[in-house]
Length: 136
Image: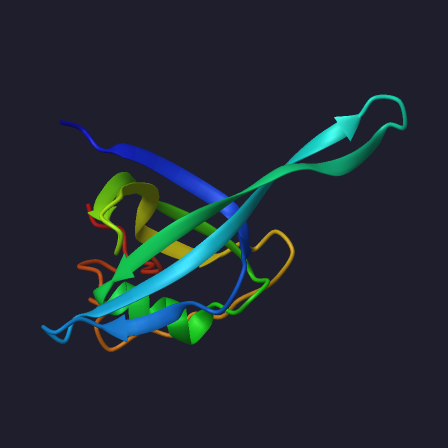
């Protein structure tokens, strides 16, 4: 089965929450408020449409990097896959939630600037994109 992939653009509702699983692997949680912009035809002005809240899970270095970078209110772009999680609550009721397991996340540069610092877990690319050498 193919995963349902999605891209979210919205604002972090709080600082990412960082925890560690029993295995020691980092896991982060983040909620992104996503609002569509709609043009009011009577006033010819843009306004916020309905807002929905996407619960996101991040794993490993990505979780740690997001926790060190993203703060409440930051505009972010996140890419990941939709997953449904099922569980039973304390009263024995079956519960279900859809969340985004994030593969990539970063700040939106539309209204802000950012500087990049390589994390300790990052890998150097095989070839430098900024190289002035022509490879042929």
